Length: 217
Ligand code: AMP
Image 1 (cartoon, rainbow, N blue to C red):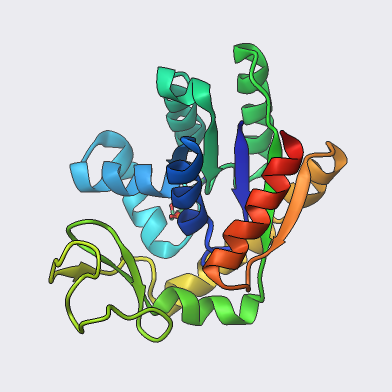
Image 2: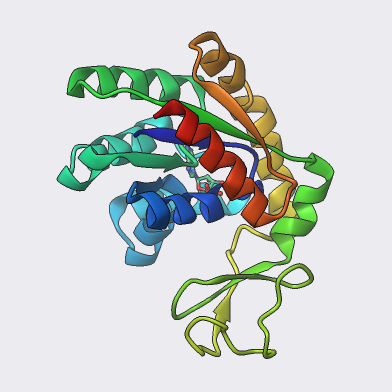
């Protein structure tokens, strides 16, 4: 099963993609994670993407399409994947259609996580992760049970994304509305768009996604 999770920054795409990866054995393909890894590694792509990401803008279609094309061709993706943060422009969606057609693959569903934009700034600026295991937390909504200690691995170091600052979040939300929201009618016209309430509790969002995926089987 091949899926896209669509929604603005902070909608919970990464959280739900990780859950789908664990529950259904699908591979999470997050272009944001891949680009952050490239920046951390200091690769050529990382150098080109770094400043753009810090401004909250989108990196070029050419870079992300190349990254996804390489990754989708790897054997583990044959059992199914979840695209998280890709495509983000109509050109990326068209490139994805073409690459899937070439590989004889298809999209089963595009799931829009419908959220209240006004609440995304709080969601994003409050989030942080355990530096050791990557477990996600939030200043107000999801604190570790013991302050300063990761519930999952006991780690005591936490990190925040460089682009989760309030100034940058606004640019990222603008980029979503200008460049990514047009993908909703694009996929609706192709009959694959589904919606879930992204403002519900995390478990309830997962339950909504499960229900619609079970219907697709
Ligand atoms: P994310 O982790 O999905 O919020 O992405 C973080 C940042 O990486 C974005 O603000 C963009 O600068 C860049 N990025 C991630 N995915 C894409 C994409 N599909 N197209 C362009 N830029 C992207």
